[in-house]
Image (tube, rainbow, N blue to C red; front, top):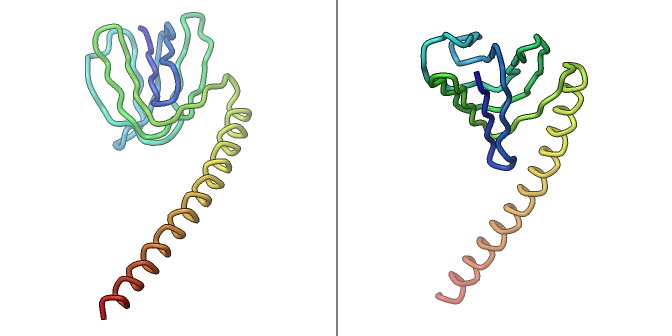
Length: 130
């Protein structure tokens, strides 16, 4: 099978795989080459794929969609991080979440300033109209 992973910010990558393990809202499932075609949503978690030589690779994925059609398994997610070691993957994901939290805080601060400016101007306009 060919695993094709797509995210909004990264180039799609392709891997020849013998097995894919992922998690849908109703539980974990495993895809093998002769599996029937289907579509499912994915929950945030770990997607595991196994190369033909038996080597496993781990992908931390955000929510998304998985489509199996023939020999292609297409996965579209918001974010994905790949590693061959689970412990190292956890550290990388933790670091990314920290960075996302920092960015989210800056964004919320900027939105608060915009809202405060809007309210202040609205009150000024209301005051001038009296």
